[in-house]
Length: 186
Image (cartoon, rainbow, N blue to C red):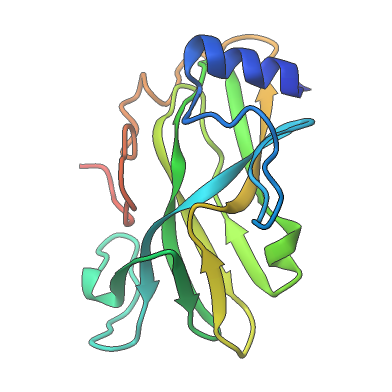
């Protein structure tokens, strides 16, 4: 399994629309950087957020998620409260090849501010926007900038195709287009 370079990522995006919209070079002036980098792709966070709140709160249960635990926000910036958490989605829509797994890591610009980004792996055959988890580990409010970089995606191509891809097993988050809250497959 090998880490894929910028030329491979570009080809997959231009030929197979693996990432859409695709930014062919790293955009970095005056913004948190995004676009194609040497061995990855820096994704952007959209302007849609779901911020966790303790107003009307109940227990956080991944098998029975209470939607009143989050407040929806749309805007050019999102303020994540101290020691709190928000969900967002990528600007980019992904169509993962059946022999490629992607791993996503937070950007150092945010990490140096105590903002941790968590994204689960993009499985082979997955298609959709990516739901992003943003944690503010600081005792201060933290600002997130919409339509700017939030994390970097690294692409790993398998030595052979997997027997069952995410799309083959009808994964519960397949073709998600908004911020998708926790689900359990029926």
